[in-house]
Image (cartoon, rainbow, N blue to C red; front, side, top):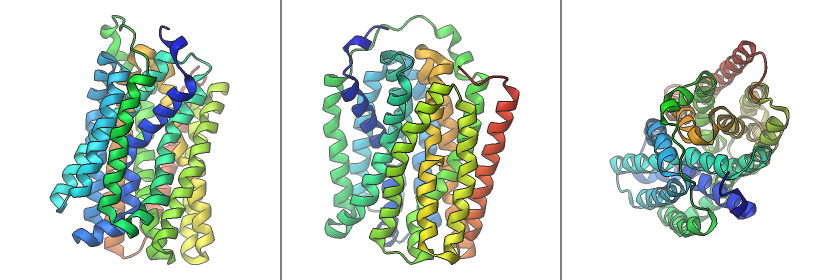
Length: 394
């Protein structure tokens, strides 16, 4: 594959990880700054959930066309656009003065989010040979968790010191600065082969549709729990803002390593479906620990949050690695967009439904039971997929 010999793998992987952090940073930022934003703009929890939903809905709708565009224009240009839109979106959030404008900024950042996986998957499929993709994919997907960790640890402290708006403005500026590294690190895209006639068939193939359905359920459950876990720690367990943010941040650090481990294991064993089944089954158990924390105390909150970091958030690394196998480098962008459509649709629905549940019942228990059930259904979907396939994709 042309271009592979010219890639500095360490710099290349680090930049892709930074891209994933930038593309998804608005999600954890909204989560750990929930208290500040709700109080500043006078929002209900359901309204706040709708802001997160706008971020995810736009990402879901835009993912297939952006994936196809990535196949046409190449990964490098898509990566540059990602950094620009993500940085601009964070700056826009920092100056939003009303609920309507806050929703609009969620839409803008959602477009940047939609480019994350198609652009980075495309670049890996083009520049990294089979056998080395597991580690690179795990590391670049772990960039999301680096963003979660930094958001959880740094944003609450920054918000307390300088205000949440100034803190987000700094984050947006850093994303725009990183844009300059794209041309230095990423080689020029090779000339695209003529394969447009098979694009739709590959993008909407059976394995990709299974992944999209599974991703929808993981996004539905994971989006709800990841958005509200800091607020759950504050309101249901009695943690301070800083400690509750640290729970999310450290869980993100755990997820950094778990994504690498799950991706490498899946590639070595060609066990994508089995790994996805195990990931969602473990997630059921760790949501149970969150439920128990309401009566048993903060230790169970830590167990549940760290356990989810080691399980549910790793599905994306395995799923994105599988997309490259199913679609090949020519159509990895479009196929990634289809899977992302399912995942982000679930991610959009989960937070507002969970927030409505807390507002309606005045407690977190019903929503947590719903999250546990959704992870259970995802396990069933993966098991049915495995049953319908004699061998895992290889």
